[in-house]
Length: 194
Image (cartoon, rainbow, N blue to C red; front, side, top):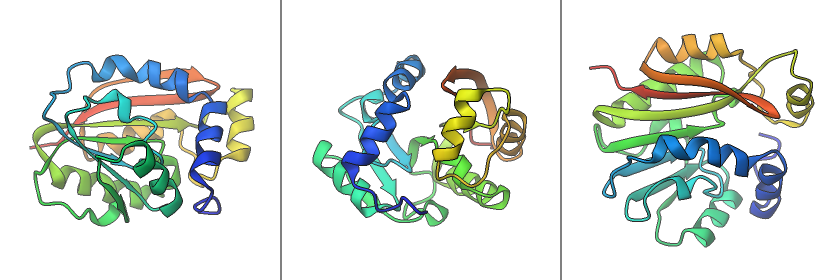
């Protein structure tokens, strides 16, 4: 949490420097069929870098712990609600969200925290609806990724197989793939278990 209160401009600069545009392009095809009326929750939304992946007409809720990042979110997306709080106790009713996005959050969570968060996400998702989860994964043979891990504030490095196992323990993994844009990333589409 040492960088929790960096300004939204610095946060966005760091994200752009580490490949956010390429990452958005990689994610874009996964979001082509999101309904215009979807209720979307972006956990760890930061300044809302990935808002453009969803239809402008959807209800898009940004949730983050960092007040300064949420200020940046509100400036960029004044019509979307920005909520400061912990994802461990989502202030939402059961089965109230159609899509949950969790991008670059898992490496900030211990095994127990990630499991608890996935259960909380399953609680708020409507039956059969989806979680889009993407995170950096530890690969010691990736030198660029190793360098970025030195700068990253996440304390819980996970290999791709460990992350896959943790997610699969709580959610049904519909699709996943590994890609490299400096870091190695594992990208998942998951469904809530019935």
